[in-house]
Image 1: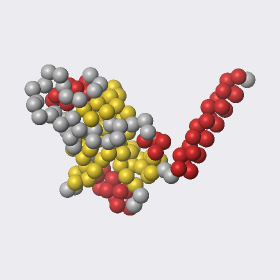
Image 2 (image 1 turned 135 degrees about the vertical axis):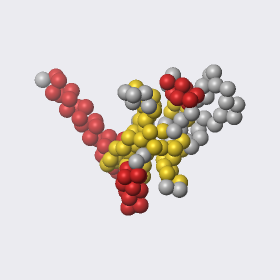
Image 3 (image 1 turned 90 degrees about the vertical axis):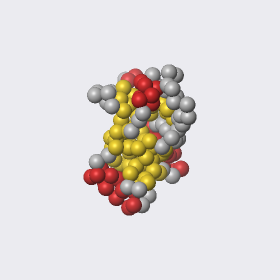
Image 4 (image 1 turned 120 degrees about the vertical axis):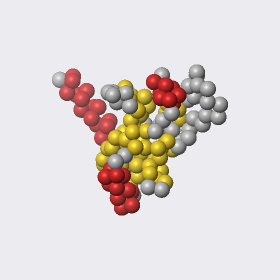
Length: 148
């Protein structure tokens, strides 16, 4: 598994309850561009249109040797999910308060581009402060145990 891009702010801004793996519909030049690590999912989000999920605002740089003249690097890209997974996700989203966010973009062992998504709920400022305190306490605890 070769990680191309990761959304590092996702765990800070959201509390993630479930993780789902989805395929992405890409063109050949986009796959070649991702193979040389020119993609970013920072600021990207997942939207639902006509019973399908789409990855929006994901930046994939134009491949250098591509002949595509009017290439849009941040176009919407379709996510490939089974009907059962889609129904599960839409149930969570319609339930209220939940959203779907991209976590990591990577190549699987078979060479397919995959997107790891999380069904998450947004954190409030108090929750973010609490997670910072917890993280700092864990670091201090590890240092104390290491020094003894």
